[in-house]
Length: 267
Image (tube, rainbow, N blue to C red; front, side):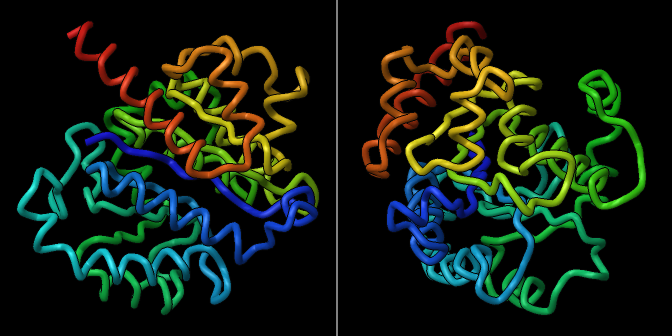
């Protein structure tokens, strides 16, 4: 099953365009619905707070759970493990930097009420599960075991990227100030997608760290434009400039289909 890592957060530029946090949350839910309807898995790396995006995702998971019986009759898989990571294969997965015993009650309640649609995992659990298969790769790609919040977030983002097997990363917005970690989270996840050779799709029209990463050679620049994601350079530019979410999703879907076909041709 193809996985889509959704890396989205508000930005000052998005707010000036009329996309406040509530509107950004709606975009995330639209993206999740779009990919779930195409029998893909969506993966998030967001913290939990009552007015945050994961609260909106949890509410949506309840809606998806209502359709679980119909989806279970298709190729969708609501349980079990992925072959490469031994991580639960729920259709919606949220990995957080906190330890399992530190997860909020809201997160655990949302997982319990989702009928197996949403799985909330601690990054430490995921790292332990995937280390046997990917430990040497993580080290090769710059992962260093350190303590502290920044190191925890970097470990989380390595894990999120490895879980895209097969899969891709979609980025939108992202804070460029007041962020935790060594660099803006959206930017680090975009960089790791390129490092691990995962297809990357930048929706830069909403500004923020996503646009900075794609437009500034000092942050992402040419490596993104040269990397293969199934889109032509013209299509990449259209995706990067648009704020039309439906148009963007169509472009991303086209890129994914091209990548899947390429994989089949090589197999």
